[in-house]
Image (cartoon, rainbow, N blue to C red; front, side, top):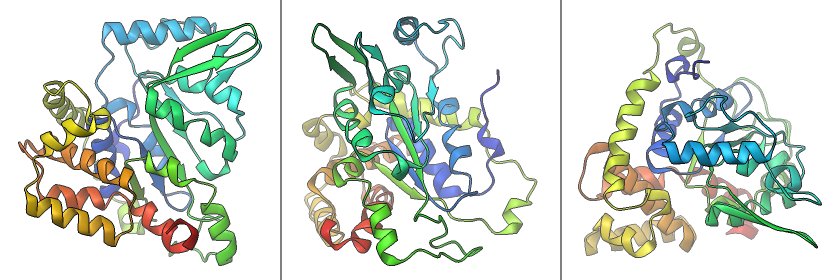
Length: 321
């Protein structure tokens, strides 16, 4: 079966760019916007711009599928794309049972885990994602069994900005109260959001863009840039999303003036210490995509622009500030 293609996506230039950056650096991505703006369409195209699986990665994916009783040759060499429903339990998502079996995060190993309507997931279910997002594995302990499953997945999530979905939507008025909006958005914990490097608004498009028949850039040409950026990261030994802090600082090579400016901007935006390194990692990916040998203010400014939801949530919820 052919992969969904980026050429089908109308407009949404910032979200398309964020998808490319996510693919290039292995970054987690959150798309926020009203219904019908293309969030799911965008998310479903990430796997198609990622590098194909290596033979070793294909064997890892096949091993997980085999344990779950799924056919192992189906889409051999293609990145997995898993899309569990928001009613999924923590066992369905991370694995478990009396005889532990892998969950969705392990079936998404070496691929994409897409969580649509993110705030609709049970808060506990989302919190159990935090540890495997850091360690790329999940340990399931039962009375007589302890199993460790791989879980190196790339998270892509989508959400409406409010319960009715129309906050900031010029096409339809939002009917939610400030308290309802704050309660809805607070379902996402700060520590979970901190682990999502790219947070992008996907606005409603004007009719002129929706009816434009000009195809967007195809996945194949986007993938070429992604592969070139990944080759630069291979020389460092890690994808940028997983680059240790000390190596990250050296790779970015900020001048003292740039470092001081960057720290003052993050302080002014009230972003967390964890967000400091998240922004740096994205800035390094932007430099890799443009063929730059170091990170400059242009990359830092664009990377800071991808922390939109952090700022929106802090504005709506003083307890996060």
